[in-house]
Image 1 (tube, helix red, strand yellow):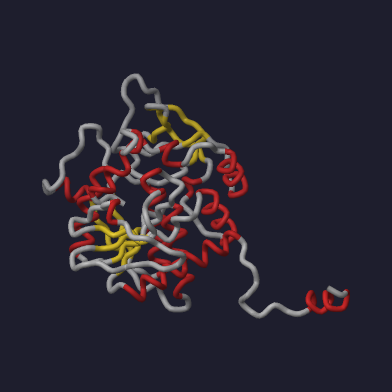
Image 2 (tube, helix red, strand yellow):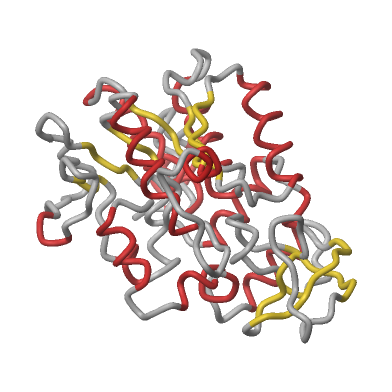
Length: 315
């Protein structure tokens, strides 16, 4: 190649829209494509929204996918009744800011009217499946967006982006369909629905870097703060009105943060001084445990705990 030819090649402007994408931009583009694909294929989609970091990123992507039009789907939260106040306040504020409809399925309501029984250990994460499936059936939702990622846990690692659920809401791994490139099969029979995971190919670190790049607001519990906690089974749990320490579990005031949002009785905090995004990203980069492995007691029941729950209809 001559010097003149090389000079012309370098000075020729790249056509609009053909600039190379960095890793985060590629993940964002894939997720936005998935949102638009679902909007075109399904009649009644819904977005699962707990106020946690993954569902907040999911909502942010949905806003970008349809801007300047509003997000054309409602939100659904399965409320265990054991959520931290900061998370519920953030959830309600976010819903109001975007002007969206929020459907709340309350585990407490199911316990109060006898449809569910309180567990002996006091945890409620396993109790979310019935209210979730009832809400999907009652509202005739045919596509349910979730914030699950493949790096979180082995059952989620093998699940497709479009994950078919049968008429009982159950996941059958053997019925999973091939997914080639960006071709997604949303076909389903009456009574079935599809769980859709636009963040499947993201990692926890990708999520945090995207939050930083997009300046996405999160609940304050994701950053270091002082909290009264007690230790059980190697995890720091919040002493709350629904759940307390045993006699041999002293309450301590420590500086902690949460890596994931869940039922307060089985979701632990981690000791941390990471008070801003740069510090959180540095901490996550150095971690050798996923957020679920480090902080979720319900995933420690067995090696197949998550898959067993997903087969029953869990998130």
